[in-house]
Length: 189
Image (cartoon, rainbow, N blue to C red; front, side, top):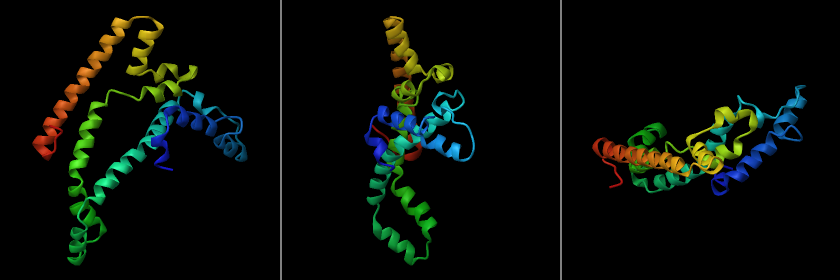
């Protein structure tokens, strides 16, 4: 369940969410009906946009994080765990003193790479989750650039916005890389 969403597109994930929260036969509304409540179209609720966006993003990306961090944990020397157990360390102490320092490089690299995408909001996800009811609060920079360039034909303005966003993202990667090398001895270059 956790790996699957990482390997499918946002269109499939949003279609699945729409099926779950559908007022006509969706699991969410079937449970509401059993409780004596009326069916609602949660995907069209303005207040539900942020929780749905956050939940679906976490659900889709937990698989990638699991793959990366589990592979990093398997590279930690098992002899360290055995020696710590013999010395009387419990599971929490092994995690704190062996696992986390053993995967610190991976944590640092993943952090640097995520900082480069901090201004990106998975416009595929946002575009597919947008409904007329939540359009006011669901507009992000990427969907604004797409709308400005395609719908209004202001290609130069949309390109300038995209370029500035990319330069800011590059600057954030450079700054984060510098700070990670200075304080964590981890860096991309």
